[in-house]
Image (cartoon, rainbow over all chains, first blue to last red; front, side):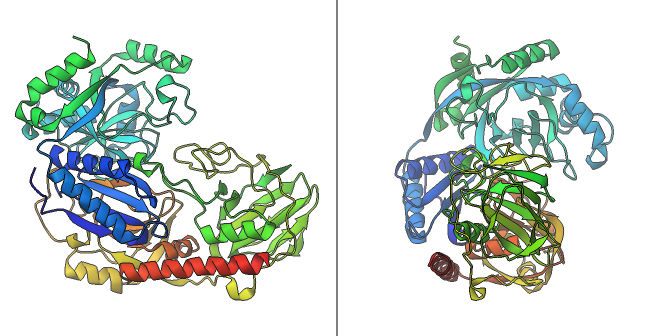
Length: 296
Length: 322
């Protein structure tokens, strides 16, 4: 990769450094953010408290009484330089499956309740998504949404909420505006979409993303009841690859019962994601990811 | 060794000095909105600064003590009563079993802090006792306090009669100047927009809590552009990015929001600057209607102010514990 002339460094007052790699979203900018974060994590300066990779940017929180601001900036610039000299970026990560009950009663009810804040008064958010993306039916839209994997480009907002970027060429990416005015309510574990990003709402609360369905699997578990949360209360990590799978109510209820019983575990496999190989042939690359996930 | 919440006030909750290190997954640093007031309250009763206290916005709680101990009240100016007898603020005093601590109407500032010897002994979650209500964990059962809650206390004999000298007590005002390091995405504003941000007098709205403080005033002008891929359609939109604690965002170009200690960690609104760490306690003590100006300072000035705040803490420690 070439050096990134467009990168901007800026202070968030005395405790933050914000690095903007690109104003536009792309996998390249996101990989750069993750790779720079990884270097800073590995050789973490004592005063750095938080390293937060964003979609196309990086936020560093630090205590300038412990490590001077200029040292933090120098470390970030050195890491960026190092990353820009790599011929190709790759990421040791994992792929896992998130079952989704699309067109479910919970998001439909909430969507109906806040219709006055929506672009399209009739129908639901799924129908809006299908129309806006030029698809003939809701089923075609669900197939596109659940047919190819998504990469976790950022974790944040509140309590481990993942931002997910669809791993298909840009012209095939689902794009949708957010609600005209944000809702004051969103069902927990709603699978939503705003701009080019999907998100899974970790907790009930306000939100502006279009709502397509719900997943029965928790992604945030402060009590750490499930095996997948043994190490930490948040499941998603930047770089995680996600495959949505469309399920119906009976399977939703069955998984819900497993979660309740504390026995549910995500289907997940470790993978190495190599950016250039993906960009060369996304469809073939995604097929190989599916083979890894489903042991084919 | 417990305290009963007889009346909770408006949004009383347990806070300590915070939970750094988890912002990368959307868990904010938290901690008392006014860290200095919480630290001083602890020092007055003989605790370490990072013990857990009760934070009460706008209205004090009523507390009944199930054990004899030592108490101190700091923060917003408010009449304090023990069994209806007046007690001083910024000074520690003893309470006996079944004594009741109550408050009058808040006169100045916005947040009251109550420290008790030994601190409130709620469980440590990710290294802190601070309530993070959005995530439903930390503090007392992960939520704001309710009538009838029984809070456990830690061990501590307490140090009655400690007093913060008048000269070291904060002065609250209905007009504040907040020092801001401009930057981040401020290149998205027009020159007129930036001038407007700094020259307008902003009024704090009632939409203000641990997550953020919203201000009313004139709209800000953005540079028109074809939005970059993924950024959203409004000129104030960016590709979702991490939000510094204290950063100022302006959704739709109206009503700037200062993110506070329970900040959402990221989102898609352009931030135009960040309140310096030394002025974050001052924000916490503003009430709705407070007239506010944003003063542009350099990073070097922000660091000088930080040093001054640290020296103030040193003076408080010396004055209280001598």
